[in-house]
Length: 301
Image (cartoon, rainbow, N blue to C red; front, top):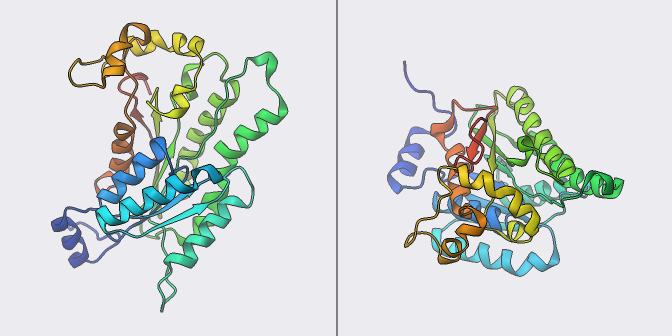
């Protein structure tokens, strides 16, 4: 049985393969792409040839996003577009898609296609049950749950119609491990995983839809967690196969802190590698899954 051509012509596929850039000619949207895991995902996809729409939220991220975009363009010869859009604002997702369409549409035919969407933007704040407020509930669910829904709605007209699209949602081990203080955050990530399975069915003829579930990652968000929360994580880290530190290989700060933390967090590029794998042609038979991106921190998913 011959292998179907899901997106590109045979000559284009051959060109991408021989160039070592399997995502050449693809357009990827990455929300929360200015820093941390999002920026690492942008770097990985750019290395593989994808052009990028890098979404960011705050004015304080404008400069670092511009520098990231410029660096990726010069290093990998891709096209980038940085778009400031608040995923927690009902108008933000549609603004991002409209801006991307205006920039990347073919100048003569008007054709515009979104090949890859990474729903990475997210917010978190740990709160004990007795201190949860409607305002904080609304804030986290607006960004972490409603934001991806509205982005997907705005993107629907521009997704491929031949299963070549790739949607990856950034979940968390918090969706299933019941960490103290994460009634809201853990709930948002569980909702995102449920949405992943629903979208995998609804979009079956257009794209695969998967989630990844990082554990602790060496980002600003993890660095801002409390000492009590990190102490709570220690037994999980100690039992994770890949979170054991390796002197002379891992960053010295993690080696020095290993006794206190129980091991090391992930590096952002390790998460990005799993996400990029799910964006490849080779992942075409994987959909509706929550894929481990946590070094064995959560092994039963």
